[in-house]
Length: 263
Image (cartoon, rainbow, N blue to C red):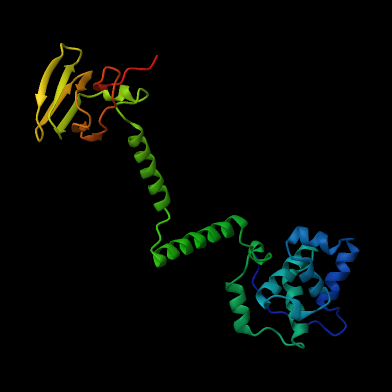
């Protein structure tokens, strides 16, 4: 801690002024301004302004007084006395008012406080910049009612639709998926026709269906139907529309689920 300001007498006219004394002692000790800056953390520019008495280049009186005190103490002088003489010289020989002395004694600054003002770290600046960008982007989205995640949502929907649409019971590449649950086939007949039916490789049965009637078949592993008339029914497999089978070699329209792999 620094000592409080003491009552001092203004130096006689013959006494060297504080700035010149600081410079003289520094040179006698063969110290550069940079050496003093490293030791006291007072900037070289402020040290030069102190020695040349360029008062307008110095910070506020409180900081300047503290820096002069640091400088004087570092050189082995009475820093407080040097600082007081410096400001008496600046003020034309007037002493510091008593009420100012009291304020200085109760608001002494530590050497760390008297060093150059602390700069905001780059990490803090980056954090504040990021926060500003986030807030600006959020405000823009709210103002324009734009949902930045809509693109991702649409892509997910499209992917799901693509996966669903690629499945077809007549496609050997996806036929195994149909066996994971019971096979269900429904038919609404558009014309009179005969149908040969075999479920799960059981013995075939032949039935006749008339126009306007419907039928429903279920199997665990395999559905096999032969329609004798073309486009004679509207088909649905597991509640999804299913194209009517094409003409087979035997002259019938064969539907087999799952479709056997082509050799």
